[in-house]
Image (cartoon, rainbow, N blue to C red; front, side, top):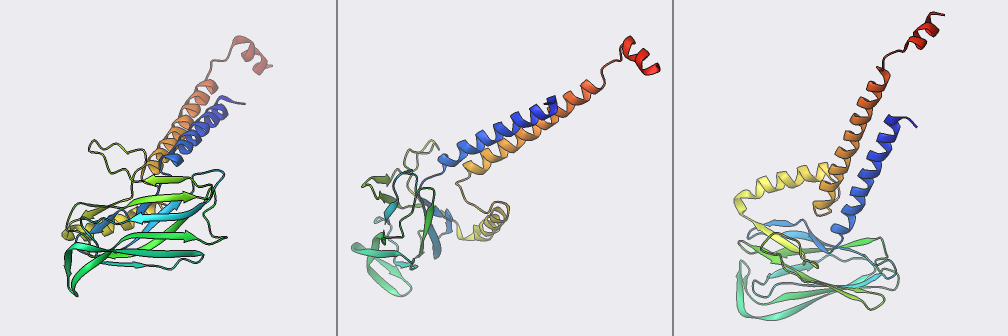
Length: 243
C-alpha cells in the first residue's frame, strides 16, 4: 500500500471515530424546533429515541410548566399510541383573547400499543400545538421515558448556568422576541436545507471535524507522494536508462 493510500485510510478511520462519538452525545429526549416566538402559538415535536439495546420505549410523559401555564394545548393523533392530556386547576387564571382560562394541561402521557413501542435503534416524534407562549425566557418540559423492562429514565435536569449539558437534560424551548421572528425563521430554514436532521448541533460539528481531518490526511498524503516521486536518480539508474 502506498503512502498516499495509507494516509487516506488513517484519515477516514479518524473521521469515522469522531462521527461515532457524536451520536451518543445527542441521544436524549428533545423538543423540535428548539425556539419559538414570544406570545405566539407553535407546533413542536417531542423526539424520543430508544437508547437501550435490549428494551423498547413503551410510554412517554411530558410535564408542562405550572408557573407559566399554557392555555391551549392540542395533540396530534399518532397511530398505535394512546395520548392523554391531564388538566390542573390554576391558582391564578390565565387571560386570553377568548376569555379567562381557569385550568390548563400540565401533563401529556403517550402509551404504546402492543406493536407500536419504539424499538432499539429507533425514535418516534410526538406532535403538539400549544400557545400562547411566554413573553420571554424558556419553557422547560420535564419528561419521563419508560422502557419495556420497567426502567424509567427521567429527563428532568434543567439547564446549567455555566453552559455545560447536564446528565439527563430536560427538553427546553427557548423563547425569542417577536421582532426577531423573521430572522429566526430564515436561520431555521437555512439550517434545515443544509442539515436535514436535528441532532442537537454537537453531531454536525463533530462530523465536520471528521471531514476536515480526512481532507488534511489526503493533502499530507499527496505531498508525501509528490516528494517521493522527485527523489534524485542515482548513477546506476542513469546508466541503466542510457542502455
